[in-house]
Length: 343
Image 1 (cartoon, helix red, strand yellow):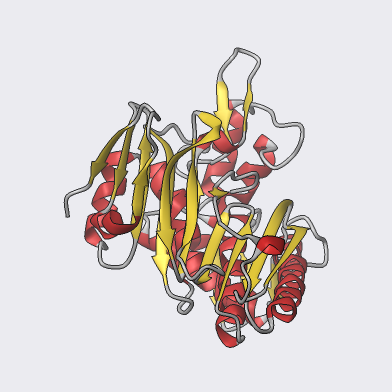
Image 2 (cartoon, rainbow, N blue to C red):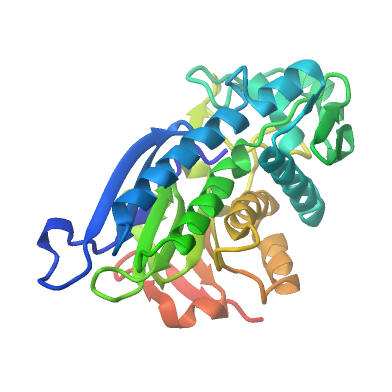
């Protein structure tokens, strides 16, 4: 669901220009989960942890992809039931929990609708209302039955874990970083970003959030350590229908249509390398975009101690939570009005 996300990293890496005596920095670029990914590690064991991270990401793709016939997800969708890998089973349980928490704004059972619209293909289309209405009864977590590693679906239903697969992968990378001897690192997994420790210069990492209206500009910059940043927005991928209507790629589970939001983008920031914080940020960012500004702010206020967020609104505001006050930089000349949210 966050394919082609353009959350940008403005990380000061220095690589071959690292100052004398500074920790060595290693970098690795890969293509996995239908997107380009960049991994960087600073300090002892940097190369080894990047190789382990790359291997882990590729392994996860083989288990979680809806389009790889041998994956856990594809087998469940094709057969209606299967025994899942323990990691896949845990991710499915989290997905069901996040669906409940968000009132269904995030829902992995939208797979039939994603396929109907061709959202993840090179040939998307606008289905007839009757086609959408026929599939809407198949959407809802009540159609998923999970116990331990066993899972089954009601007839005609299917799941798509693409909306949180990269978040889960970032959790796995974070665990590898934490268990290694490196002093810092970042993982940009198609826009799902995790930053660990400090840069080679001993500073927090700079994570720049793209201006959704200008592909070559930033809406703001965050200075972070040991944090996940995940952005969702309709600008990331869209297509124009025969009548000139622009349809973006995030499906609203309640309507079966691409979400119509008063938000241009939502960035969710969570902290710490444990407890699936990357997965949670991934699910929340999608859900809050679908909800729209008012409901997103209400959702945050109900859980404000546990995550931060940046909202870029359709009417030209950038809203950010108080927890980001000391690490938030406005972009001069952006044209946005910057407003901290009240708790």
